[in-house]
Length: 285
Ligand code: PAF
Image (cartoon, rainbow, N blue to C red; front, top):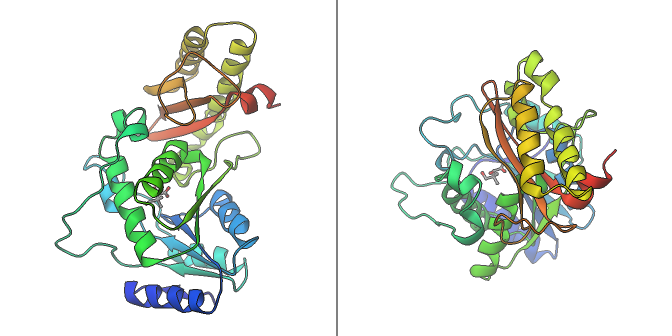
């Protein structure tokens, strides 16, 4: 049976006790709906930590009123069973809320939070930064693990930790993909069978786009070509598909190995996001 903490004070006390015993603790923040991508974060943390706390909390402040808070996958029993398979280093933290009823203080990230998701989901990083800070306070871990699937989120959290000199080490873990290249995401559960069949085209066309740039096509032209193809193949609105600097997250036409191709677009009712480095996209099979 996996331990699942529900009460903030009990979670805090447990982590403080582990620290007093000299145990290295890692936090893996999630909103549940666990898949192999989340489990890869836990497995990475297990290599160098004695205790792993996986938070399962669908954070309401990172959803706008018109977004999918109500239908976001909630499967706590399944999540706990998946975590239990990873052994007794792992426990869960599943509070009913991380906020007091009159919570009124928010962190509003700037800088790398402003482009991309900052434009298309302007409420998003305020909610993420605030809840991640609540998690860092509640689970005073040595390290925290985040997926590169949400590359901009990882950059925003790294910046927040630097800005507040917060005593935690942030680790990014490469995106896990399905056999056909689709980035794993809890929201993939929303895809109809027909949309699931089309979805891998996103990563394939990101690869083609990077390979076009490698062969001398201008980045803007290569992205425009990928966008036209995606729309012809059944994708809906494209929020963005463009090359961005890996640190500032600003758009760039100076593409180097580390430059990220960032994408967010709609397929039916599902918003997909993906990204990878120019180098990985050029070398992908
Ligand atoms: O990436 C997520 O699942 C969420 O944004 C996070 C970091 C757990 C905050 O709610």
